[in-house]
Amino acid sequence: MQISALPGAGAEITGVDVRQMTGPEFDRIRAAYAEHGVIFFRDQSLSEDDHIAFARRFGPININRFFQAHERYPEIALVLKEKEQKTNIGGGWHTDHSYDAEPAMGSVLVARQLPDEGGDTWFASMYTAYETLDAATKKEIAGLRAVHSAKHIFGSGNDNFYKANRDTDGRIGNTAAADVLDDVVHPVVITHPLSGTKALYVNPAFTVRIAGYSDEASNALLMRLYAHAMNPAHAHRFKWKPGSVAFWDNRSTWHWAMNDYHGERRLMHRITIEGCALN
Ligand SMILES: [Fe+2]
Image (cartoon, rainbow, N blue to C red; front, side):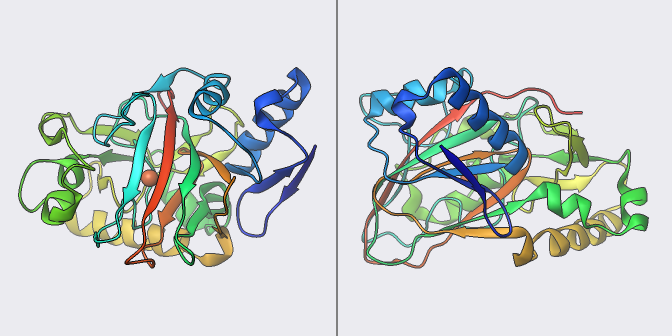
């Protein structure tokens, strides 16, 4: 088994069938996941049961509240865009579940049906985003906390993101659950629970403000941090192929699903693993 760091973010792992990881292989894969934030496998042939078994080795499965589930496997969320649909899921820089008090650790995404061209996913390293901030900004954000919310994305209001994009009906549901979710607060800089490395933990989708800041000061700081974190030099563009599997960490990466394949169907199976409170 070989682990190769990719330019920008993540690592590719070759020479392993993840259905049959030995104990030592599992330990190396988990260490690579903690270190690189996202790991990619090629040429795997995972059934739904294999996908679930792989994810379970890393932790308990989180059943998604908002995504359409696989009809026979509630553990598997469908990330789907049909031929005639225009809106995709995850089409902007974000990290999943930052709106939860204990954000999910990460997700294992398996490609099931791909467009001929397009549908790549970008991943950006929030370890690198933090590490490459200037010293004054690091000092400024040390100890700050930010408020995160799901309401404006998954909520039932007509101006909420997925509601406003009506062709997501059926793919995104349970909007009432988002309406009643309490907003949560996390540190702007976290110490990653697996690696002990510092990571920038704000994101353009779910972070709504810096706690204790005026709207103006909060927006100014967040825009500055986002502009820095979006640097393509901190990111890797992953090209999906049949048999590709991506396993990302929500605490140390952002991702962005490109929406450049209108007229073609794209179906991914996603399993999400429970996480923990962040400090
Ligand atoms: Fe996502």
